[in-house]
Image (tube, rainbow, N blue to C red; front, side, top):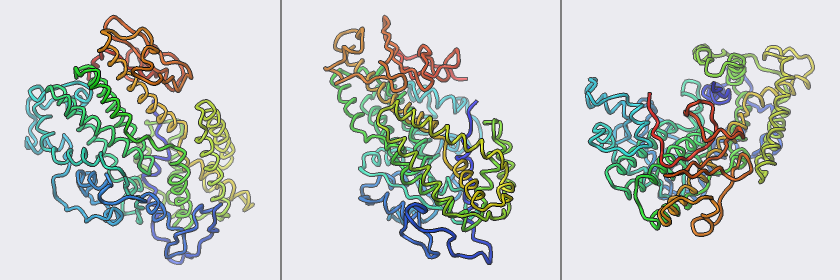
Length: 539
């Protein structure tokens, strides 16, 4: 059963830390502004604190203009509202250097909303199960005759999808980070990335349109859409926040799956496929997790600590209580999460500690984490990260002596109290690195496998059959055949009478025979490509 990362759910309520300080609370910072504490020493805000949002945005927007920024067109496609209701902060437009978007416009409309408006609440005969229909058409060629309501929906979104395609060709992607400054303004996650959810929906829509073009015999238009999804996903994934990173990986995986269908159904020549493979290789690479954690994630972490000192322990107290309720439950903890969200901690008591100790401790952990992530050799990096996680686990074991914030407040020695609290903050705010790294590695391996699949298709067209071994692809079709990131060995390749099975063993390091998530029997973790494709049944 999947586990919900505490850091991600807690972040949704971290805006509590931005509430105005209680009347009478001193404004003087209780920490030293220095490289080893606050990491940044400028710019400063009106209260004398480091203005982290401004520092991040100034760095991220270097070289960015309204004319070269893909995010400007993406925002015009999505519109100014969250979930069709609440407007995003006007700060976004200021940082993007563009006028605020009007309330109404030709913005993206998700399928369910489109169907409700078109049929005035009545379910037509061809309505079907929308989620199943979308899932099927994400990886299978289809026609307007087969799915007329999908064709109508895409036509209604044509203008916004054209903006996405155009924006994906731009050289830069910058979406500002805007902190929510009041606990009534919404969650920090949406303050950071207001368009994360719409981006996922739009990538799916564009992929569905690509598969529709393929079904209608328009391979060029199909590939243009698929390539746009790849670029769009990489843009989003290279954004500043972890939310963008995860959304980008997910949508890129959808595009890769559709690309394999394109290989099977497009009937292009070997030279045409070579050009398509060249297109894929021209997409800018994924920004490394090391770079991400060395600056933005470190700064976001430190911002949470500074906010906790200045405005109270709302978010940290919430995260601590949430962690206790979720421990060992995974998604079964959702009712507890909802209950806690409705009844968050109210003005928790401060913890008398040395905040310099808390900040230095956070920086030390980030320094060590970044060093692990910068290990170039996959095996060395994994071993370093394993040790990192083991040491962090020891923090949790020691923290069992102080199960609540109240217990920490009661520690008589201030030095001990400060270090215990500092370690608790690291536990609560540092995300599960193994999960994130595995996601990044699966994405990289999926990209490698897809490029090999294109080379296999070219070989098949030229030779009339698939090769007996992958080595036959070198050097005409590939300069080299990439190996398996997870096993450190060659990829597993099994040609058949009419196709092949190509796969990596996946995160678990075990050969599951090419079985992956959703396959039967369940339990597989491999990253397979099958040709011809097996059409999966929808529930």
